[in-house]
Length: 181
Image (tube, rainbow, N blue to C red; front, side, top):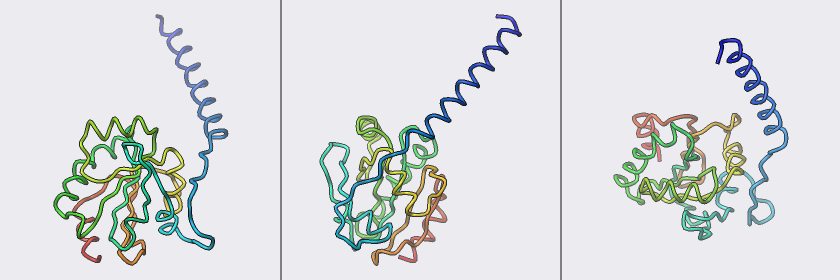
């Protein structure tokens, strides 16, 4: 292939890629998460507790089971490099702290099949739930305006958001922040 042909092909690929991104952003708005919340439920933590999401086995789980416990909620996806990098540390943290001090939960933003395969392969030591692409909407309610991943939320036993983290966790800082729980 000549340099001229290569440049022409590259330009065409860029144009089609840009068009695909434009169409995808404009038409593929995620459906909002459905909740079983009672009327008058407000706030992201209440929205989280109102959800029932499937676990990696496909069994619906009420997230209200975590109400009254300090939580570290990690929004992630199998295709997100920084998400995958921090998962072993999150698993170690969960094993170290047990479920008595802080409970780590993962909310996967991908298909149930992809999340189940990933969870099986990497032996995640904390509960993982499948929210699909609409999990991004829930993370936005917690302040993730960019919709970036990973996004982690530290919630106190009192149901108040203590801190949020966009990007790969810095575990030294997280441990300091967890001391306030």
